[in-house]
Image (tube, rainbow, N blue to C red; front, side, top):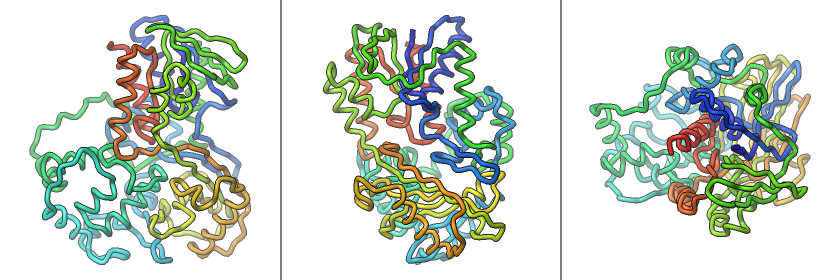
Length: 473
């Protein structure tokens, strides 16, 4: 029997791919999924009414690359194609993205012509950043922060006004700490191997591409042909984990909610005991852990303190989420995806998503404010209340967007230690963790955002690759 720890997207995806492997290889593997809470879906949660949807976590998915196409294949296989709502290149949410600098919202360039024109807050056209990369000397490094890399190759303004807020949007983190080797691997390799990003891009145009081949479903083909920017799910993104959970149940996966594991006891290379809070022991031949690294660290600390320390070395940040609904047909916002705030602005908010522009079937104006992240404790302390976060969010929104209307409905959530930080050296850190597991013949595989990427696509693909790796051993 294989046991899956965690009923978030990583755990559900692991169950999905294990089932697919069982069916294709005519195996009869029994699967057990253990979730500590009463909900499957992890950070993906949607609050739905007839007028609005409040997304508590992710709200859109990118369709590009191998990982993006893989997710679309899974969507179609699960019967979710009809629920997909695509945002195409001509949509305002695809074209219009803003940053807030010096008390002003600035639209970022969205086409080739914009690269040759000067647009605030940049003091020069962005083409100068390309020229800066061409003349910047090569610097041999094993890894670097994204901020240092971009500053070195493209200039300080690009690092401050484009990349730093982007990292706030991706992982609520500080670009001065996040690994460029992990989040921008291809660009970093262009610098290290070819002497610069532009040089690397030019050389790649003349190389035979060795892209991983992936079979594409009709949904994936449609996304490619129509050049989707992002997509979401009608009725809320939590439709995905709900459908996945139902798929697992229909295929006889033993799914246990409110089941908290307190310790993992490794017996040998093919037997592991999962000790529950009530003292009950659940034996398994292999464990797939999709829970956060810091949670897993506590479960293995007695037997494997060294592994526990390695897992705890992956930092996490807390994010405040404030959803706001304004019940008015009066236009309150410029049609756009939203805006991000560079850390140098020293604002309490990381950014705002214009949900009523991005998500279908919204009445009035719906906004989601993200607060804190890497700076959560610094800005709000360790015991801030939801009421305080709401007051801060409303004050900032009304000042930035010049909104006078009262909030008609809202929801506040504090997502404690919700996003891992891929700080410099993350590749080596994860490699050391997996090497320890391999060298000690521990029957456990690691899945999810702690190790392989923070996005929905990354988490799903992490499950796929771990299952395939185990099958091929």
